[in-house]
Image 1 (tube, one colour):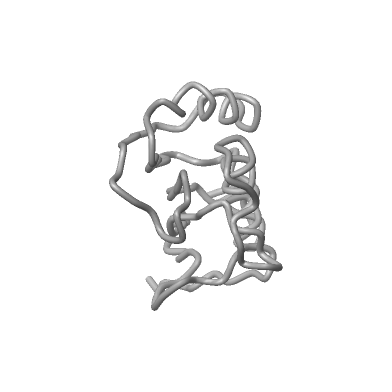
Image 2 (cartoon, rainbow, N blue to C red):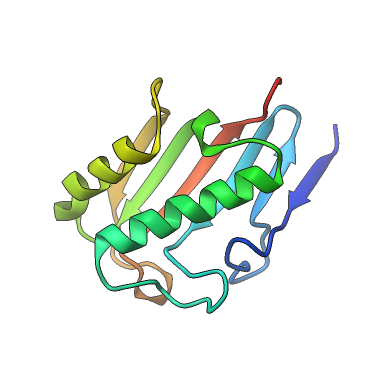
Length: 129
């Protein structure tokens, strides 16, 4: 099977030598996304609510480019600058995802690129596969 890089201008450009996502077989592997505006490549705000909503929008844009949706996420990994933001993140995820919810891991990290408060990577099933 061949792996295919996914790239869209509707999500921020990669900050290094990696793809926004890679499609392989029936799966999409989305690289960690920050709360960056895809036009300005700057963080959308300094609060967790604005950043988590932008992160989810960025993941969705990448999924759409690959022909799927974040609603088909199988696994999310969340990296939080501060675990005290856990409740706000849960609220945003519940508002943006539908059951059955994806499996998930959450961890607090010492730092994220560009001073972001949250980063999410995802494994997503492709439609019909």
